[in-house]
Length: 226
Ligand SMILES: NC(=O)c1ccc[n+]([C@@H]2O[C@H](COP(=O)([O-])OP(=O)(O)OC[C@H]3O[C@@H](n4cnc5c(N)ncnc54)[C@H](OP(=O)(O)O)[C@@H]3O)[C@@H](O)[C@H]2O)c1
Image (tube, rainbow, N blue to C red; front, side, top):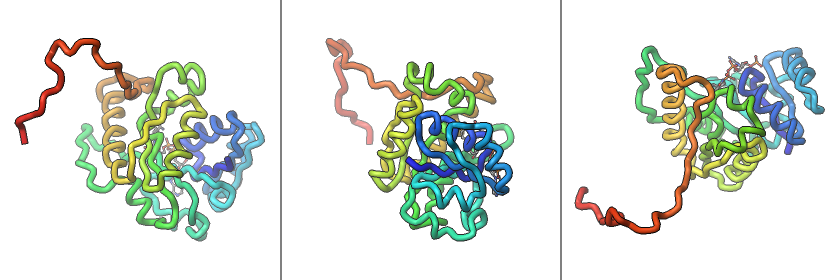
């Protein structure tokens, strides 16, 4: 897969390196061609680097790491995004004292409204950079969930496959509107990591357990609550 990285900071650099290790073709984009080229040079693995415009033109899948900035301010023309998968890994800035507001419109939905011809998919916002450093092994032994939401099913499947390639356990969360919940999880895990001092290796794993052999608690009864 040809992958373009828009913004080569912590997330862009980390995911780009990991995908390149798995033999994807990666182009690191940046505000300056020099920085994009420097990131590619240190990443190796046949990666390329340059401007965000060049990265957007290169990739069939793009990673958008530029929180809250309209792509129209980043790219010369947003037409280059038409029909492409645009992964949004962003979380809102942490408010003082973790006093998060309820998410009525997710960053991913805002992004989708700014580039309506792109296939926006939410993913990779619920684990810290430290976790990426463990990819693919021993990460793949820990069933770390990547929650994936987007309105286009094929785009979701592609992003799930990119998550599995680097040792994560993708979880299909359905339409893009569910990114509100996923961003809420991103807020929660950062509260646990920073506020409760669990550290950057704290993650979220969805486990599906086997059915109990005997339902000694009486099993699930229909509820009388409405
Ligand atoms: N770091 C983590 O552990 C982590 C984990 C999960 C999710 N996230 C989320 O992922 C997003 C990126 O985080 P990060 O840690 O990668 O941040 P970062 O290291 O600061 O990288 C963000 C990059 O965005 C680009 N950028 C910043 N302002 C810009 C502007 N006005 N116009 C164009 N480009 C601009 C810069 O790229 P260039 O310098 O290359 O131009 C910058 O390096 C955030 O929303 C964060 O909440 C982070």
